[in-house]
Image (cartoon, rainbow, N blue to C red; front, side):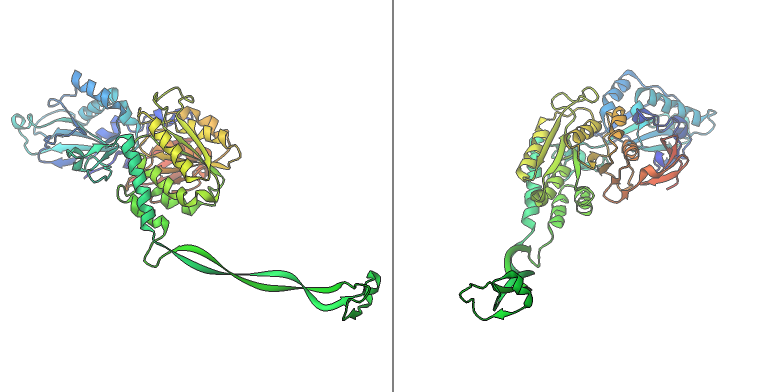
Length: 492
């Protein structure tokens, strides 16, 4: 049966407080001992830009120079799955577990990034179609690496999220340019507007007011005499003052307002329907309405690097409906403009807007998208968080909107972030059905006292766990040990 390495293993090297993302997450020893799935014969016949085969001779574990060069080129990709394929033979006297371990160790030496992720699916496959060496030696043996699609869309605009979606290699599927992504965003926002049918109605408004009313009588013109309570019917030659009493009266007025028609849907539901045209992940539209009060005085930092256009569309949809209520303070970031992956803490590509005008928020977002130039998949999240805190020092916290499949490149800045003494809440985009979350963001939320929000669930109070405590995130279980987060054995 299929398995994911994060279901059953112990981390051998834990995250440190400065470089948690550089630690070993899964070990060759663990992978080599997993129960394999059995096939008669593995077929290496699928030709794809997203599937790479690394064949090895029977009972050997060497990469050739071309393999090593390819692994180097793949180091900046997002790996979805890695398979190790071998054959079961009769009468062969060698240690299969040892051989598999040596193969994994060799892979780690040339492709270490794979062993530092908790989001990769690992499979061990044994072939038993023939137990005879002369036949089985011609079977495929070795590694198969599946690359997760990044920014790839079908001809109808649907985002492809998995290498197992074979539309990925269709001639009409493509990677959108930034300008094409911006046009997609505009269309999604416009479609949400059109879905909501409004009608003009008059709404009755009732309110009570306190008024002064003349009784028709007059009081004595000498203030001291008024205490006697004598009243007069006329003002007389002394021009007596009028007597007034106060009373509460109900005032009725009518105002005109637009409301959805009976056959319409709410704006948020309309926006979600718009997003569904390209993605099933409406995480921002799901959580913004629920947390308006919590995030009212937060500053937002949102990742606008490639592949995030469905999520900026959601942010813009929401603020188009809400921006006029109060100014929104947002940092959009793209990891360094035309010179990405710069010095830690000085990468740039940060775009700040403080406005209650939707047009200004939209323009700043598009400026950020157009200013970016790709770069590696890891992003300068913490630089953006620190810049957000600098631009809005009065904010009670920071809301980070991030890509679950992008590691935090500048994790060494975590001490500066924790020194802010403000929670960093995290909306994670692109979390799969398993609910598994990039360890970097679990670490950030725990260190700052923030929450993590996915399409399916919210994780609160991650900082409450003490040394020795176990806690679950998605399908994974973690353990706190000396302020380090270890992923531990867990059956699904």
